[in-house]
Length: 381
Image (spheres, rainbow, N blue to C red):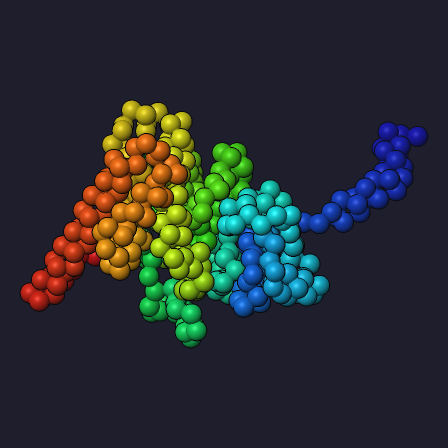
């Protein structure tokens, strides 16, 4: 028998190969996007939130819902939806973590997608959000796609159009882009832009390449609030390619029950915000110590810390308008004692002095805008 005939005969006897090929075809295809959704007592909004993902025109996703020990019907609602759509995965934490960091980190650990997106349980995606994000990421080989978002008060009708009135911190520097654009890869410039608000740290209006987050070990720190700001600062320092697009893909609900708006007592509020100022600054500084750029440029290293402290002081503005200086001084000293020990008087003075300076800046800024409005001069964009 010729070699050709032998080979031909062998090629007709391949039941094992066929079976193996069949088995390969049966392996589930990995999702292109893993949408990570932390949940805690979100029954009021969770159905519309999850439905906004299921309604996507882009279907190759997994929705990882991480429940932080809810005590309402949140899990029941999502479980009912999961019975009808196997793209929904529910993960339940054994113990309440008290914030979004651990649920998000858990979602990252179990995720399988090429890309990662984060969705808050009281918000929604526009119908073509994932399709738009993936298309841009693939076209530009992006590590991050940075988008805009609609911002609307609770109970207001949502009208997502290019003319929709919405706010975003990216307007503070450079304005909105008109077409996809690659942001600078110069780290010093990125840090300065972060400080000025161009790279505001919300994590939910962006798409991330999963391999970047895993390779650089970028995770959420366990902070009471603003963990997303520090997470995105880490991303800015590590991501080679960040593409900004004018697309509106995220519908942000102004929820009065969010953690930064639930702080009813001044004691509780000062605790959370002081934690952010001190612990957040420490986390940032420890992270920057691993970069030669920051070690050799102290002024550059101070900018992200200054930004975190400014956020704290802006939020404490409400207290200084309602309480006397003597009332607040006692509360500030009590809170700082947890961190500063015997140096409380010194740091309490710094706290008050910096805040007073911040108040004057805010006042002057308002006065300048009023004078420009009276003179007919258009405010700078």
